[in-house]
Length: 100
Image (tube, rainbow, N blue to C red):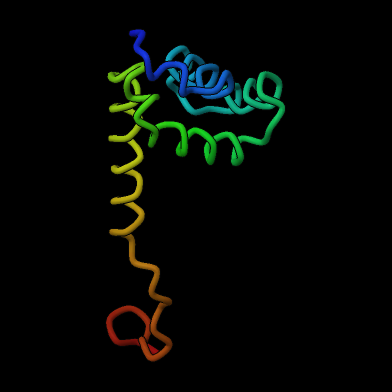
């Protein structure tokens, strides 16, 4: 992690979250338990805060490689969600091979 004058713009929580993400790249139940213990918040809330943190220029200055990777992963997840079809199945379809 590199230092710069914008580091002071990051809260202690933001720096802790970035350090945690740097050390723990995998998303699993152990990470979720660690989030609850270390940050005293639900994983859902943690990821809300993380997304806000990685949008800040100060975070990018603090650890550009990590923040860029996290932003790239977020874009990939967003694109994958957008590509999914949420249309309900059509009720007028018949069974396999035209069978009712």
